[in-house]
Length: 200
Image 1 (cartoon, helix red, strand yellow):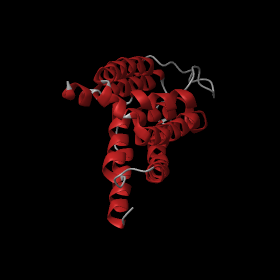
Image 2 (image 1 turned 30 degrees about the horizontal axis):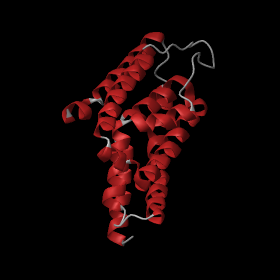
Image 3 (image 1 turned 45 degrees about the horizontal axis):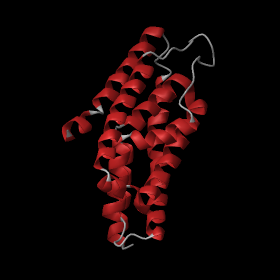
């Protein structure tokens, strides 16, 4: 990989990882509702799940959509339905503010990892990382390099959103404030579906 290509990849990884999207919005909500320790599996699931996704796409999974275009349309439908479901869960999340440990359950490691496959932004990021920044013809070694760089940059970027949510716990000290925050996060998740709607 050339220096210019590596520089472009690092910049792309940073910008795409730090900007708002379903992963960051949900992680901030998890941090605000459950704290950093209980949100850690969510964060690690995002990073490792997305890293594996890049490897899988680099090894040819994306070509299945060219062979079976209906599968791509089906994935879009599943993405919309699941994001709406997550928005509903976020809006209706309940926590016991009088208890040091909130009731309810945060997103698990496996749920966060699996979510990458129905996350429109994750698909866009992974496809661009492989097709634009992996030298052609793409080899297994190059795919691993791209995935490793993306994972290394992605973790601190999403951690910013997690810690932002944790810091907001100082403000979310009443049921009304927490409810308002959760509804706001749910609304932003719905708005994150705009790129899908623009493509249809």
